[in-house]
Image 1 (spheres, one colour):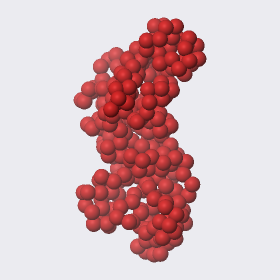
Image 2 (tube, rainbow, N blue to C red; image 1 turned 60 degrees about the horizontal axis):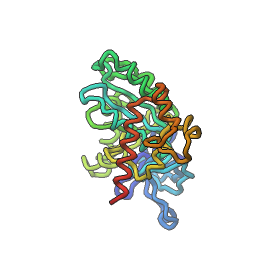
Image 3 (tube, rainbow, N blue to C red; image 1 turned 60 degrees about the vertical axis):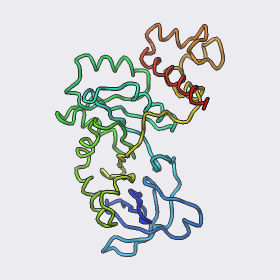
Image 4 (cartoon, helix red, strand yellow; image 1 turned 180 degrees about the vertical axis):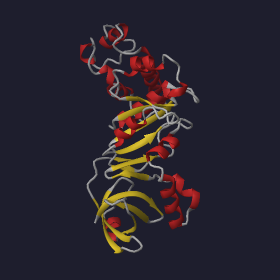
Length: 292
């Protein structure tokens, strides 16, 4: 049989089959001999041992499209990055750090701004101006009023999605809307393996419906930039792509260089100054980091 690994704890791997049943499986020795470490998101083959207790043996990990190290996850299609319009205040610098981290992992991003019922009247216009050229869809959302929830749910369909964002922005409320039984499923696995609350530190893949999963990943994303060079940060800045070949100098970083087409685009309003200011801040931070 085939399924998707939703969790791995204490030598057991929990695999969701096409019907949504969760099987408790032990990995066969061949995986250890081949040096394969199963992670949530892996598509896997397993051999049932008991249909009654849903137990089996994990026999094979199918080829991965991608794999993340922190958190350990495979076959991730996209990230749903959730921030709040207010309470806590919207931190665009932190949002841009998330976008840079996801770009470094080649993971497309959907931005959800929750608590839209608390948003300032001009926030929508402001965010449209700032993020129009970044290539990421932006969904105004309010779990409290229901605004944008259907659109955010639709964005998940048919994909394995990492849900990321800072504390207090409503990720848990959104998770409970998308899959009300998610906490119950986590609790069931916790009781089965006897780990209790400690299991919340492990990545949990939640099945929403067939071929649709999401991960609410503790600690995914932080205040720290990815371990990249300033030149890589420039290459990952999507707004620069249409203009960098027009810069006077090859390898232009768009900061102090003359005849820079990117800075010209900023002056003409085609690239938001807020995104540019964060880009410059990140480049300086990465340069400083390389000194130590």
